[in-house]
Amino acid sequence: MSAMLERLSSGTKRLAASRWSVPALCGFSLVLPFILPSQYWLRIAIVAGIYAILALGLNLIAGYTGQLSLGHAAFYGIGGYTSALLALKLGVPFWISVPIAGVFAGVFGLVLGIPTLRLKGDYLAIVTIAFGELVRLVFLNWNSLTRGPMGLPNIPKPVIFGYVLRSNVAFYYMVLILVVLSVLLLKNLVNSRIGRALVAIRENEIAARQIGINVTELKVKAFIIGSIMAGVAGAVFAHFQAYISPDNFTYMESVTMICMVVLGGIGSLPGSIIGALVLTFVPEMLRSFAGLRMVLFGLTMVLLMLFRPQGLLGRRQR
Amino acid sequence: MIQDLLQQIINGLTVGTAYALVALGFTMVYGIIRLMNFAHGDIYMVAAFAAMTLLVSGVPIAAALPLSVLAAIAVALVMARFAYKPLFDQPRISLFLTTIGASIILEYGAMYIWTPQTHAFPYTFANPVFSVAGARISMLQIVMIGVSVVLMIGLSVFVRSTKLGKAMKACSHNMAVARLMGIKVNAVVYMTFIIGSFLAAVAGLLIAIYYNAVYPLMGFKICLIAFASSVLGGIGIIPGAMLGGLIMGVAESLGAAYISSSFRDGFAFAVVIIFLLLRPAGILGRNVQEKI
Figure 1 (cartoon, rainbow over the protein chains, first blue to last red):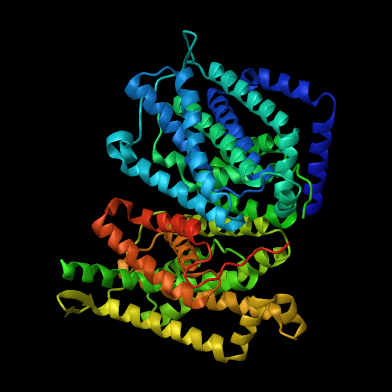
Figure 2 (tube, rainbow over the protein chains, first blue to last red):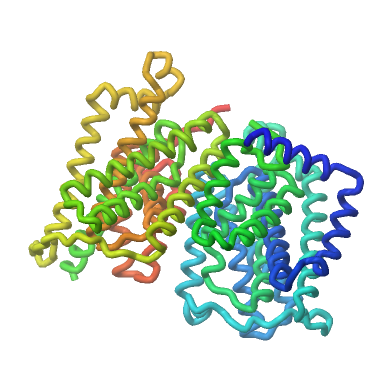
């Protein structure tokens, strides 16, 4: 088991390191809509792209900075509801409502982050779980605004420069652009002074503080960036599905996201994308085991931790 | 008005004692191996489902309850041995994620076996109701409070005066030194899992009978409550978990009655957040400065 994973991982790593990997990947993702067998799988690909944005943002928080957040679905939901409500109640166009959704989620990230990020590991995890559940309860019970469990239907399709993104193909390319932008943003960030400081915080917080890193400020900043990305992803998801309800933003969603990060490899950007792809496509392929799907999911998580805690593309760390 | 308040407090104390039982197991495991066992609440669920299945298939209640407790302990031991034990010396995030994986397996495994619906617990308790100062307290509530109090006293005596109890305390202070002193650390760790799951299983049975409901996700909320209770009292401290459980029960009951019943579950979460922010060491805990 372990050896198999090792081979799989080193193979993937070698592929990722090769000179042709980036152009090949770009080419592949550009022609993907035309080789997928049906509209159904294209929709799955779009969802995978949305998850990739979520996993990338969460990787900055949990992977690079080492802050285990299990409430990422809350920011995803805040973004989704913000953009959907702006569009439905005020008729705000898509290209304005999405940034607002991101900013709004970021503000919540700031408000939650400032007091909580001084908590350590497990404590932070529990606070974020509690926050995620509280946010979901608000979606569920604020009937006059969110229609509670009935959810928000008929969220309009995005209109960009007068062009309505009606087809899945158009939507796919928009999500692809967002994923590429997220990767570029994070790649620049993690390879900068800030990125190295974040890793220092993860590896040893006290030592990081000793060498003059402003630990709290950086933790909060990473948290806000991750939250903004989740908010944007939520907004895109809302307009893609045209319907959202509190069920879209449960604790299980948060766990799925953290699994994507861990499966791909803590602190690895290509890892997050691979994690998002694998954990979106594989469960779809397992549809025929409907009932046991989540059990397999849990089992994968346990086995992964037992045999390869650093994920497919991660490095072993202490 | 006062009677109403008293009534809510009685109801809160009843569930609070059950919360305290679950919190005890949680806090003991944390105290010894610094593990947040996220699957702890699911042991409580497994006990309730096992009892339900046994009762439906005609096993008398006097045999069904102990057997279901044993089943829950067995599940916990399998988990501890095969999922947690190999990771004891790994980074804590790995261990924490493993417990989440284990909890997903148990929750969705239960959904697969017993369907996601809420089932009625197939046992009705002869339940006369007494009147105390205008408030009503049922026989079942008295039994629940009684059982929990006896177990808590038993646990306190056990930890204080038996050899194994002292070994547990030693391990929670310093595992390496405890091992040097000849304490069989592994045995102590497993024993802690056994005691903790025993308490959780009893709480699961009591709550299943009390609410007459068994469902696969019943362990998720209780786990957060157990965590909140432990933190409230000071994590790793046994009397702290008892106190925390009772406070959580009463807070939830009063919150649902006087603030908003649709946010019933929200109070537990709000208390967790507020407490972790204001006093992460808990009511009975001491702040420990991290060493370099």
